[in-house]
Image (tube, rainbow, N blue to C red):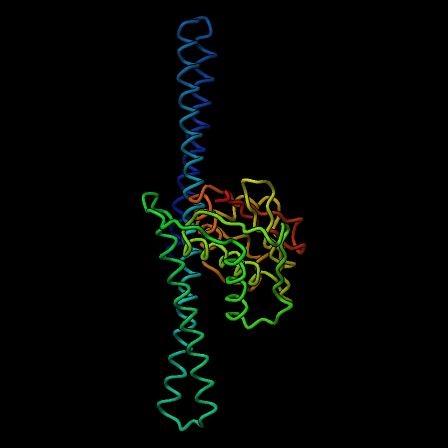
Length: 301
């Protein structure tokens, strides 16, 4: 936290310095123009240099502001990942110490084992997210392409999410908007596409607020594409944030997130995988508290 404050103070100093330089440049050039208004050639040259200096300072300020935002997102990511790693490790250690130092009956022992296994899965999921985010940034990485039945893959991801979050049958629903006898396939990497769909479902479940009610729909908008829509009735997304949420490390403001934790990598991974497969990913929401719909469109095989 202290490093973040120090970095922010330095950035603010550079911004202030840039603003002062802009003001000084304007004052000097205006004074020069007033004193030498008869010298047309020099006046023209001065205006050119003035515009060049101002442009450079403005661009420098823009890049500096972007760097500040990137640093803030990076620091937020580090804090979130640290929490995601530390919490389950602390829990596992606590239960292991209890098992070692105390006599625990068989039922309680199995309960401790279940909790530790769940926390181990959470740790593994966090590590996999970080590794996958690094892999998706490698554009040269080749995909192991094969024909994928998108309906079957979606059903598998729904069952996996239902087991992971211990949800009942009504929490996750599936519908299809195409001829049931038709086999809708895509050409892609099975593991990558499973990761993308699982991240969409994880995102919808985490941000569903108190009651999880997520619907998944597969449709064929035309003969060449297939679309998968994941809709939740959770906290929603401000319209100004809809395009930003797919950026690496980006998370919506804390006042909206409440107590939801995350690394800011899930939707970045979704977009990266979908774009590698020649598709696109986008989000829709009416605003805060009105739920969200995430759609991925992919070319059919």
